[in-house]
Length: 209
Image 1: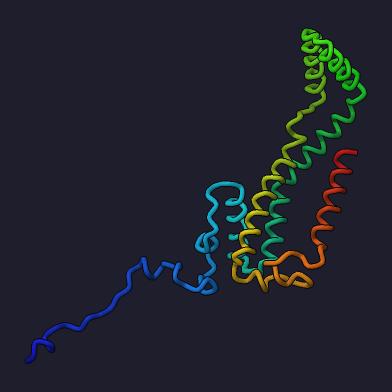
Image 2 (image 1 turned 30 degrees about the vertical axis):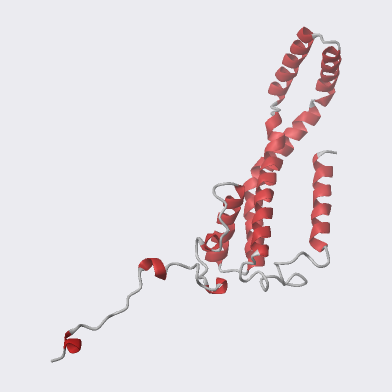
């Protein structure tokens, strides 16, 4: 019997690391699962962009929807989460408007005292304003909580979608509908920017009449 025949056959095996290393795969072949966007290089740590990435990815993977639907559902979820802060801001604004005839003269006096560098009067008037606001249930932070959280969510969403379209993430180029079939490029007719500006103008007019 020859020595070559006595040797066992060589069986090639692949390690778990090589089997799960997607870096050498074509980007379109990487399976869509949780962590999919990070595997494409979109890793933003723990900031607002990472939060929006987590939410969008979970909706896209578990709902199995095209990207335009996933983005829309993400926006709806954010609106639902922020609904209560916006209601609280509206209620707070109504309370402030109701006591304005009482607080405005005091505020004017406080401004005048501040201009005259009368610190004692400023402190007394500020205390009086705080007492009136507390009795009316006015809390200034409620007026800014909703818009602030919306700004943070919008900031994260903007940078996430910008990075996704720059890559672009597979499916974005065909994941739209109507006139915006390609989500990796700007709106060719500027309909979305115009609609966004219109809605923002309306919200500001309603919130600050």
